[in-house]
Length: 132
Image: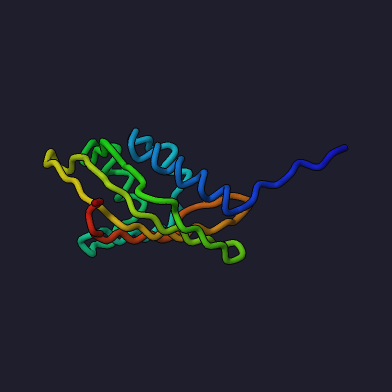
């Protein structure tokens, strides 16, 4: 019997980053729940710390609606054992509390693999220089 080939972790994180993007665009709370650790700490571009519950509630209620997330370049993904760091810059447009927003943001996410699955444990967002 042939043993199934395990996916390269860096490739897997890249795929999960794309799944995260799709879930954010669709406000797919179920998929976001699977991708985010219960202990998530997310520091947004205003320096506010948010939890998984905060993030899911914003999507579930419609408070946050993201219309576009365009990745500007190839994400940098660095593997450190059962932890991976993903850094990417994106152009985002959407609405928060019925107010439009948009801009270029740099994200850093810490993924951790436990029980055979990857989840985001921590994330940070900062404003970045707009695309040329």
